[in-house]
Image 1: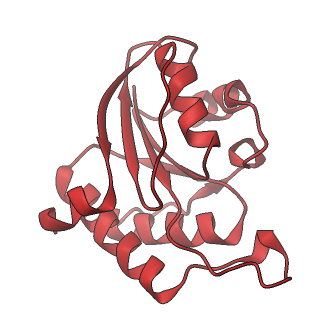
Image 2: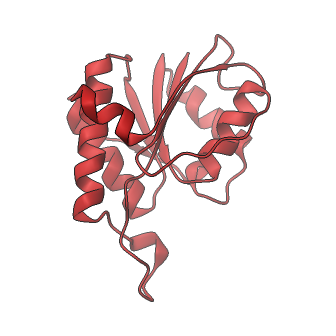
Length: 159
């Protein structure tokens, strides 16, 4: 199985409003579109997208869905909320019965999830950053390997 972890794009400042409703900025949308087009060009085989329910992640997941030309809408799950435990996502990911799932969420949750899946490590994903994990036992503790980690600036030239 392959997991593609994508951090949401640059979001609006909180400005006293609800954190859950913060949308992407124009720059955040642009960078997310570039990264998602690059991911589509990499042909990673993403066949399902799982997203945090927060607006900025949902918007990023929609951009990824469009870039990949997937017919199925992104699945939404609370297991990708910032306060979730990494192992909480396992059952949900397995239920998708897909060979490659993109997880769209937040930091530090995605980095903690990657470390849990590969058996350790310390990572930090930039906004619109990507990690690719692979392994026959994914998702599971120590069951995968980190095969790629990209900041947006690494992916933009591929568009």
